[in-house]
Length: 296
Length: 296
Image (cartoon, rainbow over all chains, first blue to last red; front, side, top):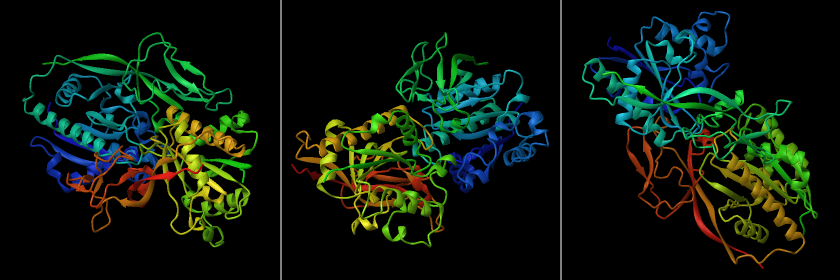
């Protein structure tokens, strides 16, 4: 089944401004995001948060797209309302008029150019293989919901397919030339892939593609009063997707005490010390290394 | 004249949180910031901005300390009021009860540990020489006001002496282990210096110390409607205090056009692409390289 309608979304988080400036560029030169077999639209997801130079006004918009939340009219915060509007515009979730959503994000973590896949499937694995082949520094990040896509809270899950382009490191509210370029290149490669996919012209892809799958998140250490007492150890800082072994330094308290990683197997941190996750006192995500099989 | 009273200030910018956590540490263990010849107090300059996780509520607090602004009762914004209170508590400017103010800041720019000196003088040059000798990676940043200290807008200028400890890179609202450590070490070295200075026990200092002096700021490129059309080129990004020659790439437009540096002599960028300076559309500061003479 071909991909006919694509939405490139920016500003889902108001202080991740790279996508907003890419939109300005593409609005001036629409040919850059068109391909012969698809129709591409640009959507600015949270203009109010952007104007206020904040991640969000009331709630994190990129956590409002579980189906039961979209259907719950009692949820009336700004982003809870905005999610319903976007679902009307691009979805509805489960029966979407948009075949592919590409949602542009940035991170303060040293994650490089990351392609986040919220669902499993042959389409995603071929996409990941193509983008990795063309841009070998891309990391493939699998974050499927265990239960069902209906439960998944990300904006991009309201499309038939959806992915996140997540590039870092860049501070919130900052434009970096390198991050701008990588975000643009990844988006172009995804659109190129769709065109080749639609026309049955994909090049020979590798049989497998290396990826990381989300396991769980770790919180920063707190005392009995719930006050933060430490931070991510420099052994882990900036080492996203590098192996972390049991017993290696993970946190350090402000008094200088090292807290080691207590797990029983090698993991790979991601979103290490991401600024936006301080709200929930999150320190890092932990990932496992996997291989995706690519269908011919 | 000895230094008797010292204030260590944090949270002047509400989203530069490293100093706030150092304060928490020192409040629990006051001995760390005491020395036999001085009395040290801790001051949280802008707790309201910190609680709101923003640089400021109404105005940048660290631009409110020119004497004529402190005396102007018509300026009634939150930070304009807060500045008057802090001037009462630590100053008054020009006749200060505080001999030395150490104001703790962070930057999103790749500036490493930077010691910012807002005034000229033998005391400052000896301090810079001592800190550089003990911590060679420290950069000395001179930002004296051309006219008079009365005109200087920084909080630390209300002390008899005042300095800024400015460490980066760290995104706003993030704690980094390395930045925490460097900020702590610099503060400790400044307090050590004061103790040695007071007791006439300074070690032999170098005759000169390398430093950079602020020349001017550059704005990001805009079109005739005042809209931003480009960003800092990756040739300059992360190259704070590295030489920039006339004709070298400085900006790049979103359409890919390189805008070279148009000056007529070698300069050294600082605060390159600092997140907080986007409000004023500032791209970078330009510095000249100088040598400070150290009196015996």
